[in-house]
Amino acid sequence: MAAGMAIAPTNKRTIRQQTNPLDKATIVSICPLRIADHKHTTQPSYYVLEPGSEENPSILVVGPSSWWREIDEHMPLIELTSGAMVVADAVIKDYCNGMLEITEDAYPGFFFVPGAFDIEYIKKNYSTAFTEVARKQKNWFRNLVDLGDKGWANTNGNPRAINGLMRMAAEALGMQDRDWMKTTLDIKKIPCVACGNLRNPAYPICGACNRVVDLKLAQKLGIVDLTK
Image (cartoon, rainbow, N blue to C red; front, side, top):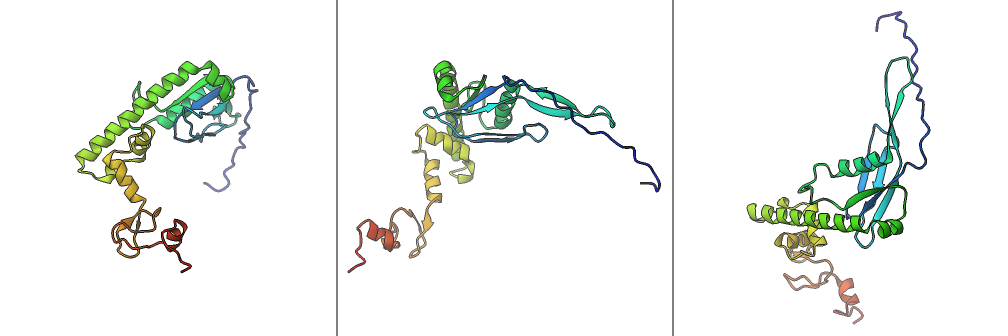
């Protein structure tokens, strides 16, 4: 900056509009995934929707959001608003954007309704919506399991071909018998201190060398008596 150059004062005030207290939307989830969406350019900017299920759905009530546009260096920022329904739609779509195997008829179990309601009201008045998203979510789960089967076959059983979404889908559909689901159980095993083979920590005896490697657990299960 040149010496002696004057800097003109700027006015960056924000002029907030009054929000409509009735402008609300309720996002509903029967999906076992958690949404934690941070929209850096809007206010409010953080939205969290906890995992849900068909038996125990979760909800998040949202209102309108604002973002600001600069018109001139010396003028206040202009507030631009998006209604609650637009916000709800963006929270779901921004989270799901780019997910594997999503189609028009195969989608995570999210939907939204106009207004602020509790889950009992939504269950009673939007039963058709619940049925439809449950159907689409099962289609999505099936697509993910099929993708896992193909990846497992094409890579000759490489565990890296399977991701968390595929495992989640298999569990939700009760398909834990998949070979690639069995390998995820092996990952949870720990090395045996006696022989080094992987063993299930829920059992005190190693299945490979038949040694008792967890005396406290063996005593608790009545396999050994440490008092003798």
